[in-house]
Image 1 (cartoon, chains in turn brown, purple):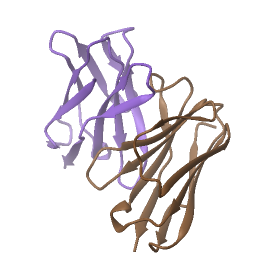
Image 2: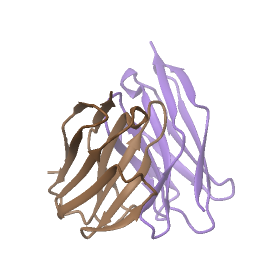
Image 3: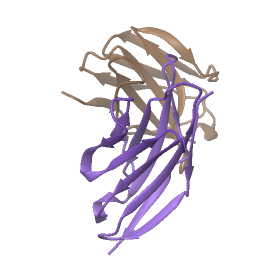
Length: 113
Length: 113
């Protein structure tokens, strides 16, 4: 199994809602990542978990809250988002860090209304 | 800090023509370099990576890239374009041991029949 699975594929939420994005991999990878991608732009790193511990937070607003319950799961909790947070949210995982191949999920298309 | 620059946000070729997508890097240490492809509404898929083992790197789907230290380049080529190659291509460099993957701004490849 060489897949990173993200759910849901699409999400529409209001600015007062609380929702969560989920990412799962069963490749035994030790690092997992959240990226945000706006239209026609490259992915921007948000968070990195290494061995289930948060190792990088790229000064992301607190309305985004990551969680790594175990080595296979990564969540992104969303609360009080703004319309400008609408984007494609990508999850990725690597076996030994970014110098090895990063496997990406298909992303969650988030629209904040 | 490491960075990559992709020259040309759009490249158009005819089916069967040579594909050349340009990437230049900036790094104070030997870099790890990658090319990723993204099809519409999809995640990213690794095409190939340079890890200093060989300067000419062969990847999937007939793509290859040559690392040229003297030119600080890592251009992506394919001898004969296929319609299915139409996508967004990202060059990326990993930032040392920080678990950061730095993406270029991307090049959209269009293939005409």
